[in-house]
Length: 216
Image 1 (cartoon, rainbow, N blue to C red):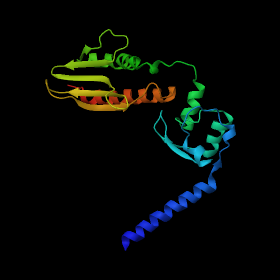
Image 2: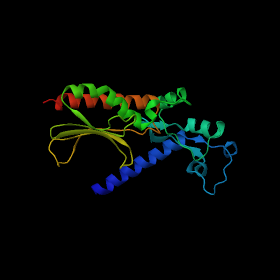
Image 3: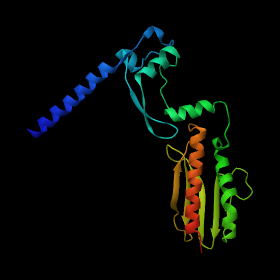
Image 4: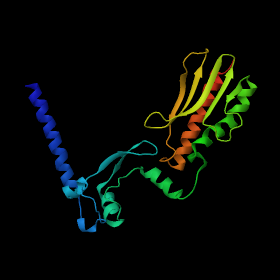
């Protein structure tokens, strides 16, 4: 009995959502869409109206909603491809617009570790650490520093779907590395502002870890 009641409540919620979608929809004008030579049509064309679409910002990772009214403008006024979708939240979209056509040093992954090395290496050397990998490289993709049997390394990891910058530490020879800091970063999709925020965050966390854990 309880199962049937829950099922009916779920069906009622789904029906109310569908009714709300219909009330708030924005009609599609097929004649205003950009020409398309594909055999398949997006769902909104067959449906006949636009609905608000939730998505995750490709730059900062926040949850955002692409309103039906903006979709109509994009597809029918701006003549955007009917297969294109919103990728950036409003803040990141504004940042991208301001920086359009401009290069940023952090869009080159090799610049990250070079800049980080220039910032942290003097303090590490003063504390008795010595460089192992990344010496003299203008754009290193891996840095490591040793002191006795202890080794710390900073590296890029692209083994997953999202590239990450990692700080690892090994306290004993032949022991596995332990991850101390990890921050996801996509230098292709992220805006200049988000790249700088990720860089600053990683650098700050690295300093905290090495400042507290790299002491004798």
